Length: 452
Image (cartoon, rainbow, N blue to C red; front, side):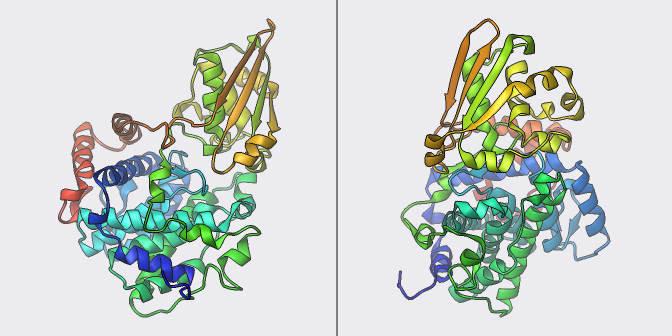
């Protein structure tokens, strides 16, 4: 690619040239399983308080019935608002997919923007698959480029996700390279989302994610009509990288572009908690053989982990189920007491359980310099469990369940979808949607994809 082109222009040219036919059978299967995984998280989040608030707000905004509001099981609204609520609903159970090295959850922002616009445009399943791949690729590359320092204050799925959503939407409406670049420029100038919400247990996370999907989609629609956007929104002197990072690397945006698909390294979550807790949970279960251990048997648990996990999770107090998903001692205590961690464990009753409260203070967290050096390429955790009988149990996890090198099987993804959607859909509806999504490339018009 020409050296005088900006990063956005090069990403745009690549995305414009990407077609369904460029993807291998395995890559198409991966896109479809991630679509199904995302859809389950949307159904699962529909009853959560933030989604009910968002639904009430958008219900008063009006709009043409273009795209499905998934948490309502069939109602439609304008594509921008559908993307907003569908995106917001998917992140509340902490089971949305994750690209570990970029610290980015691509499905949360890409798929809702793509699906909402695809319904309006009567796009085919193959067009959706190509658009999702393009959105993932652009978003992951922007997130890798902006660097780890960005993560200290900024929520990457909200910030980088705006670029990703714009790319996916731009692909659906067939923007040429110039307008695609404008869409990325307008996406970048809207990118926002600060971590302070987590410290205070505020409800801003679904707003971050939903607005990223909505704003990216808006950027694409505006570019389609001729609204220009900055060509150097990433690397420019007053652009995204300079404004939000101290260690950005422009080369990471383009490394291997056109030769390898970074979306293939995206994980599907096995536990309903922050991704930074997963390797620790698995390390505990390896140490105990996934057998329950009573609180009275435990003297002390030492958790050694990379510094970034402590930077994000270290000040969180588990006073709500949402905060518990970001609290390592709660996750460790749960894994020890029950021999596993399930979605149902994050509830108010568990938070006030005497057994949990007895055990959590015995969990001690330590930053490990070697593990920190490996981050974010690897999210490694090591645990030592010291019993009151003097026994020392040790476990280490480099590849938690769901990592591309330790993946969920297709059967496990399907079972996860069934569990997440069971309170929203009948068993017959679940089977119909499973059939359609897993054969998405055969769908000529996605407008009725979710009709049950």
